[in-house]
Image (cartoon, rainbow, N blue to C red; front, side, top):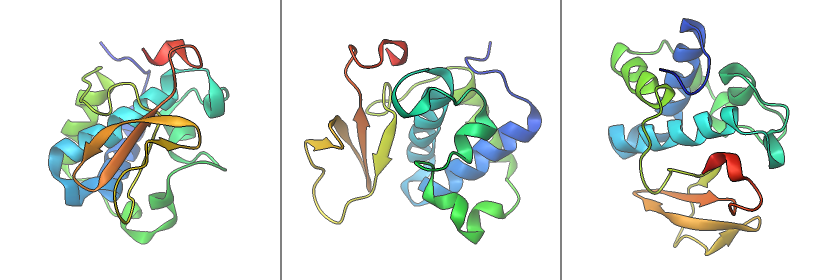
Length: 140
């Protein structure tokens, strides 16, 4: 059962986003980016109060994903990428992205906080950040 309603176009969008943002971090890194995206589409807090679909999440402006501004995102999704997207759409979660709404790739170490959100950990090149349970209970 899906944690976010979606159609095949949105599976494709999420797959392309996951690949464009984290292909260099392997499948697990891509799954974690997918967790962030799905979390943004399923909560109604903070910067995501008007985000209800995968498409809205992928193309959110301001505050969306940088990869959508680059050509690689617009290449066709591979079947394996779509399989990974379906896993996170079914609700699979991967630490440290389990309850996160943000990630970024720093030049050095992960900061303890990023825009007042706490670091939950790093996986390869990406640092992940989650709101407090008080600020966004829906993500927990």
